[in-house]
Amino acid sequence: MHQLSVSQRVVDALLRNRGTDASLFRGLLVSPAATVLPSESSPSSPSLTTVLAALCTSRGGALSSREVVSLLPSGLVVGGAFLTSSDPKQIANAAEDARQARRVQGGFKGETAVIVAVVEETSCQFYRVLENGDATVISDVQVGRTAEDKFRQDHALFHIRLLTDKFYVPAGSLGLAQLHARVQTFLASLRTSMMQLSFAASSSQQGSLLVASDTQGSLRQAVLDETQRVTGAATPRKGGRAPTHAALPEKLSVRLLRPSTLTSSVPLAPILTCERESDKPLAMFQLPVEAIAYVPWNESPAATQQAVLAAITSALYSSVDDLVMHHGAKASVPYHFKLAQFPFLVRVCYPTASTPFPGESQDHESYKTTRTKYHNALLLPLDRPLLRTNNAFDLQTFRTSVQSDRLLNVHERLGPSGVVGGRLSLVDGPYSYYHYTQDRMDDSGWGCAYRSLQTICSWLRHNGYATRADMTHREIQECLVQVGDKDKSFIGSTQWIGSFELSICLDQCYNITSRIMNLNAGREMADKARELAAHFETQGSPVMIGGGVLAHTILGVDFNAETGDVKYLILDPHYTGIDEPTAVIEKAGCVWKGPDFFVQDAIYNMCLPQRPAMI
Image (cartoon, rainbow, N blue to C red; front, side, top):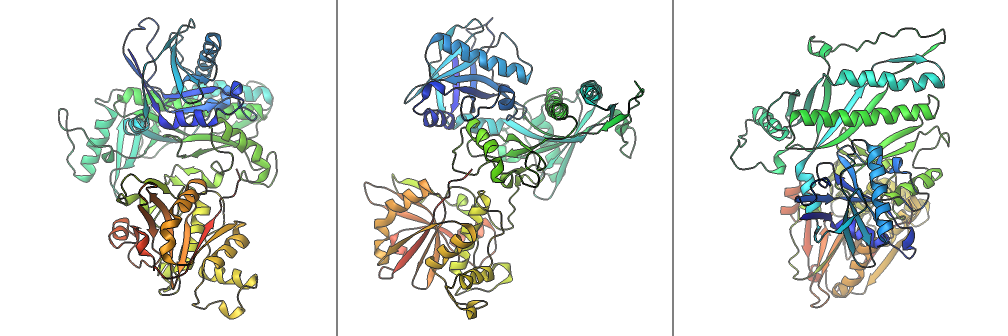
């Protein structure tokens, strides 16, 4: 009996992208390395296979199989393929495509079966396909969030950084090819290394572990034991209650200690002796390696070390191939992205800023073709800048490159609205919470609309639509004076602004158009629920609403179309407490409110920023 657990996001993406020209829609399915199907020698044995993602190989300047699998971190493998044809020959060909991609990744066992999904108009049919082409329908398919949640809970994320030895090879293309031999020697030396793992044992304490191939127990237990030692918190032993996922660190940083570094209190630089092979001048290479690997928490230390070495090997050979292909010049830079569509980080390589468009960053319009290819491969929308380097994930700080010293996405700590049977429509993407008295500025009584605009600016920045810093009060005032909406005395004043002024600033400083929604009275808010829900589902940006002497930010709507019951998710810029999520929620800085929250006879205007179509 074969069970299959498929992420709901995968099925949604396949059906959404199938399109009218379905015959051209095909690609690969991604699974955790630990959940492959059993061999053909035991086809009747029970199994559980997980499908976490789909990668398209057929659209918009399609990537090669090698380029597609390079998107995956170590620990994720091609477990199958998808197509739209139910023809047995086509299904067998798709299965072979998956096997070829697995061979590119390495470690492929020819007897392993693969999954093939046939994408129909309204559903997906999954098959288990053997090496000889025999395909069997998988009847036990579970589609939902279980696959993603289990992957996050069961896998540790390793962050690996190291610098190779200095490699000396004869100058010229032949010498660059010889780098492979030097790399093999370097990798061989790593196999005798011990791993030093460091991680956050608590918010203020670091844990550290030395792991060798003969270390006993599992990775999970070793980390929990070290956490207990550092923090003094009790951890369960074998037979006790299983530890919660929250007790385990988000990331483990890896340092490899070779024998020379273990015998000295001072880390020694690795030394390589090189025989002069000819009279040709020598070229020196020392390659930085940065890689990530997902390893099951229940793995043994030996298996964990092998997984880390596999990640290093893949990243190092990728760097060498890049050098060889471009005659010794580093031509690409890897970036990692944390996308809502995937439960793992994806790796994207962009050309360096010096090639092929000197002086332009990878976010420049010149690189739009490259970004489009990656969007197509990852089945991402073609109107949102999800893969700009400004949005890359910083593995050191474990956050996106877009920095914020303010609370992010505070609404995620809030409970349900209380609307029974409602449809939830929320802001799409991260934002920073701006409110009164931040930045050592007392704007109480007049700055609420300024703060709402700053929250909108932060949403534009966090989601890749802007790179500039969020506007200050003075910059907002200067903008309005510059366009002639206010006179010069407005700069430095404490005068209010409204939704129309917000739309001017967004247009002038961000090239963002806004829709203004007018209400003759606050009692009309109940009638705007459907319209606001449509905004959040199509545009996803925060909405500023101003009426009387108050302005607020709306982050979402929970609306039951049958009963008319509705609640609005309000982010209150009038909050003056500390920037701590619990305090914000307790003091109603972020709260669900009904239509009666708005002054019933006051005139209101809403500013609805429109998401620009860009990539």
